[in-house]
Length: 486
Image (cartoon, rainbow, N blue to C red; front, side, top):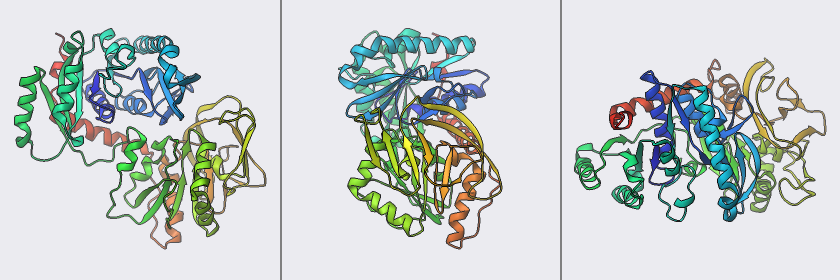
């Protein structure tokens, strides 16, 4: 099990690295996080929802993502409420103050069922568990679902990760170990310092001090890796302020208050000639080459935030002046004319709202969630058909109020009018050929030379990134105490 001294310590990526290393050594790692809180989701082949971080770990392990790897997913909706996903399916809404009274036992049952399913499918696999946040939140330890309760249940050998970039790394590690209960501390077999910059020999005395004073060996010091790894949560997006030296296009991405599925933007981040600029409501839109309106967990609420801040008017002005706008899922819905919510799925029953009116579309919230992987054929931005793939994850259905160009040959996946396009397909930008066609449309407007369009799926770049992560992990971490039976 990979534990962390805090949220954002690097547990997700260290777990992915561990999975890739074990796979290289001939084992079958089985990534598992009992409970995750995230709006960055993936839909597996059976139509089950799971956190994207466990999907990434599955790919690192050479497996197809399966919602059993993340049996409890909490999707925050604001106002201290979250949608509860058990075994890939929505089972209700929870409030923070009553979550453990109402959902602890069902959650633990879902976790055990997920473990059983994984172990039945891969009887010779090795579970690689990821913890959540800090394992020693003293006000929550007695009702912990996904850290040391799970480690004790499985007698897992634990690696405790701390992020030196945050400062106070000695206090992080020593404090966490001190707050462990006597029955828990023997489970921690090693410490890992993550994101180290500078000269290793200057830190070696600190490494020795940690081992001598805690009695737990430091198994490695992971260096700062100058790679664009997928962010673990949306807060990491705000730290991405660097300017690319070779950027020729600037694409503004609206950072919605209830932003979801921000991994949709990873392929654009990976484009060396594209600079993403995240714009929050209240910040100036400026004059980018294009705007992306991404997914939202609370579409009506986020639309209201755009309107209240004046960013909606800026988007309308930008579009009226011929600016290119791409909406994905909730962003597509906001681009429309009307959003109707007769059953109150997005707020008060009978509520409706005027959209940005950049596309003549009407969305009606209701019915069951659309949860499925899709393959389709895009017929825009070029007339030549382009195979694409992705997944749907949304409530509500959208219809065109006027004749509109369809983005795909398949009905209901997207629409286009002029320079404004919207699609329900998460992962649209991972399709290399489609992405380059869209970027080349923007480049032609700036009289820039076109990029090669014979690009593979973004998953190929993701695989190379995971390999580089695993290379660094193998070079800097001694796994022997974790893998050797006592």
